[in-house]
Amino acid sequence: MYSFKTKNLKVKIKKSFNLENFLRVFFSQYFFNRGGFLLHASAVIYKNKAYIFTGQSGAGKSTIIQLLKDILILTDDLVA
Image (cartoon, rainbow, N blue to C red; front, side):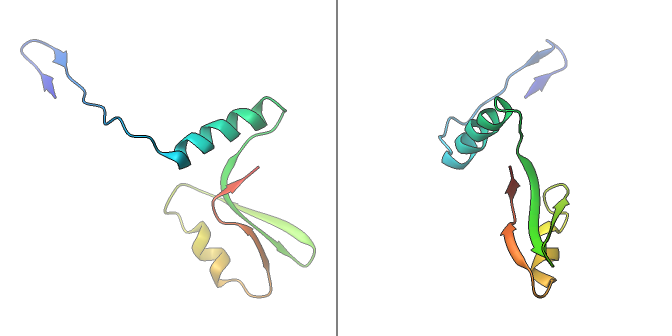
C-alpha cells in the first residue's frame, strides 16, 4: 500500500516455506559455483541430438515437447 501524501510504502510479505523455490535457489547456487547454471527450459533428445526450448513461463515449452513424436523427454522445467 502506498500513500501519496506521506510517501510511505508498506509491504506485507507472506512468510511461507516453499520447498520447490528453496531447491531452485540451492541448486542454482550449486551449479553456479561449479561453472554451470540452471536454465528454465524444456529439453529433449531427437535422433541422437539434444534440443533445448527456452522461454518465459507460459510460452509453450512443455506443450511443444508433448506434441513431438519419437523423442526422449529429458525435462520440461529446468536444464542444468
